Image (cartoon, rainbow over all chains, first blue to last red; front, side):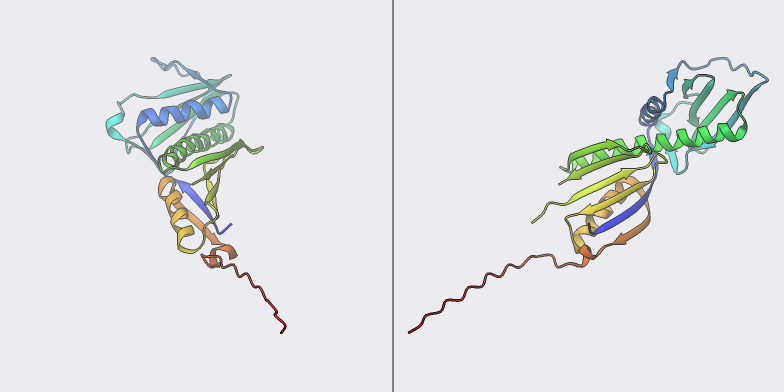
Length: 150
Length: 69
């Protein structure tokens, strides 16, 4: 080897691209995409925590106010949307869980969304530059290892 | 000449570690920059001994012919 780089992804994408990354991340964590909730009824025992997808921007022209994607696993619901500044928000709610536990789930989901987005972007861009994927595997810590060759 | 190869590990938290194999010097940096430009922001870069190796390989075949007269 001759160089090793550590990179932090910057997510700048259309809403459909982010929705696709959310769906892929959710599926890899055992969540299922749920129908949008038209009328929000707040149960008293249900806590809610919101976190941001760091370094993210949803392209304004691809987003309509109210666009959200909702995924569910058991009693835990995660809604991904956009805040007023165009950043991606991840809102986790559930019963019987502390704010700390909900935040932990939110952070995990956020990381996996970035992972899926980066995976697809990298492969698309490298293939467009004539690189070939020579190997791919999911490691025990849920990292994705890809080998590409020119 | 070996073809450049990347090993890319995308962590569950989204962080990306890229290892460039089979490229040296300026070419190696160009490949590292290419991946950085696709992904986003560089946090850390480490160059290994291979990076400083000369680009070309020189092969010397020596043969000694002894002719006794």
